[in-house]
Image 1 (cartoon, rainbow, N blue to C red):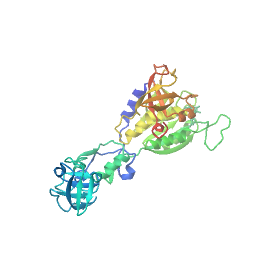
Image 2: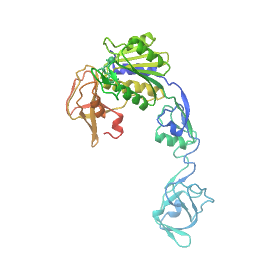
Image 3: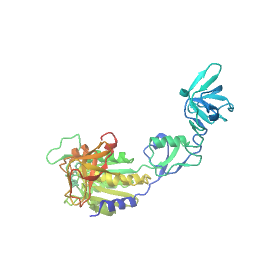
Image 4: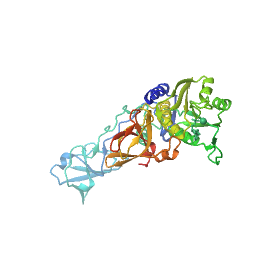
Length: 406
Ligand code: AMP
Ligand code: MG
């Protein structure tokens, strides 16, 4: 059994970018840049007024109030048609180019329009005040986004500003998903006898999508080697093969035997993590193979810790691949008797500037209800068997935390 850290290192060392493609801007959102992006312009491209008001020479406003002659107007999108001389003011709008000869803008609220084309500047301005000089945000040729950066709405604004209507991003990995288990029935069915509903199929397919990959469902295979093998055969062309169930020590846990028959090189098969100790990772050519435990919470948590990290790297992410841990104060005790690194369901909320965590009672690794109620997982190292109320511990905030469930 290897540690979570060693397992993650092994996974990441095998997860190299799988290639790139050019996409247009809205489609780039959520993807990882496969190139560094440089601006083709100075931004702003001209000295830009930051306020509606009057472009002036700051020296003309010393000892304000001062009256200046209004010689024109510049609107956003226009080019000033002449330079400004001493004693003059030009009415200007936010976003418009400041005329040559002017070095400041006084905001309209600090001026008073007078008859006969004059304006009273009520308060003095400093040179450069309310002017964004050309190139103050970025210079032509500057790298404005690094390769490996995940594109989000803020990055889309940068791409657009830098003149990039198309951009090179990592290809989305194709992930074949095979769910195994004799006992599984479709969610639309009512289980009888020892049956249970297949909850991993929908959950894992959605986790694959959330990680930016494309899910290719291979259906559900019963615990029979030839049936699992037939399904695996159909998934061999994908970038990643994810299986659920059949990797523990039971007599009908046949996934590893099937993977061996296909020549999958197994790099580890047990990880000191709770939930989820039986966890197979291997490689067949360039294909990565994950055999996740069947227990639904184990499947979801090990996906989040290992598979998601791999999928992000395959798309070109250069990030740390792990969700950041934050320090939380415990409002109630937590226990970890597993001797493995534990990820325990918790609710984290802000109390002023501190984060506090309350444990969620869970009936175990099958308790999808407790897992769905959590917005964070409390991370207790293997040797930390107990954490008392008032103590601090690291928590891994789940996506739900950031999506309003805090
Ligand atoms: P296994 O890893 O196949 O030994 O399964 C461990 C536990 O998870 C068993 O109780 C299974 O019934 C359950 N399980 C396996 N696959 C699924 C699934 N797709 N959906 C819900 N529960 C599952
Ligand atoms: Mg099973």
